[in-house]
Image (cartoon, rainbow over the protein chains, first blue to last red):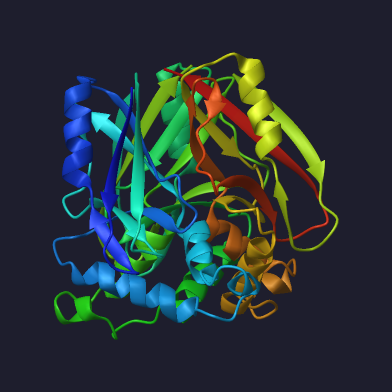
Length: 133
Length: 133
Length: 133
């Protein structure tokens, strides 16, 4: 089962919680046991699983990535100005694989599913692929 | 096939080798060909695949992460004091997907499967999900 | 369906584009819908998805990793001299999971599939595992 959804980011750096959208897709699939690959088809975005009860964590993550991967000093910046976003996306990665149990994403108490945009504002697509047991 | 196991870490930073536990789960599943998702439902831990023949590598990894993501200077530290652990977990990631061949995890000669705790000591759960061909 | 292919890197740091090889393996499998795990059984290499239209991005990524994870100062360097490569491999990760749609890898316009060698020149193996819906 394959589904796509799209959203619009509004800032250069933004982490968007997509947990409830993906949970709804899993529910609609009626697949009870399996895995769920959440994939962004972009080279300047990434998929993250972490806490979002305190949204400061997302800002801390963005700041830490910015500290370690500063902007404006890379070869690709002469072409497109967004090299740091490509480096962050390469390291954090464009997908996460989740487990489906009893028709729901098996997430820890403090885990949310999020998409990070390192080069917004942009339209971002998320592909959700479900494989049943 | 879904299995869970739990272990206790004893230090703040600890990398635990779980290769033989997961190999045993794969063997008991009697699934010969497929994939195996190893997932920690935690926001301050991660799953790693690397060499453990020289256990210094795990300490080097922990030191390198500590160098790049220092403690005590983040927004979330005012709430919970463990922001660096959340950032490390977000970047390293809560899961790895392995391949099962001839009823065993297909690992390279120098690859072991490990769980990193960045905010121990804690009880940590590991979920193992096997999908057959 | 499981396939392996091998290539030789020629430099210490090298990022090799394997998109067309893996696309060909997907095509030959005749599997139309599913997922594809691309896995390197090595502890000093990694799998990356990012832009390769401008190959400078790969050099920028290698430089950024080198800046954050300098060589020659780790415990494991007393054993084998390649600790930085192990740390990079642990963080970037040995695999990516892709989606197969209509018999092809579903990649974004700016996404290529690449293998990074952090400790070449070496013979490197890539395992491709396809699971159909």
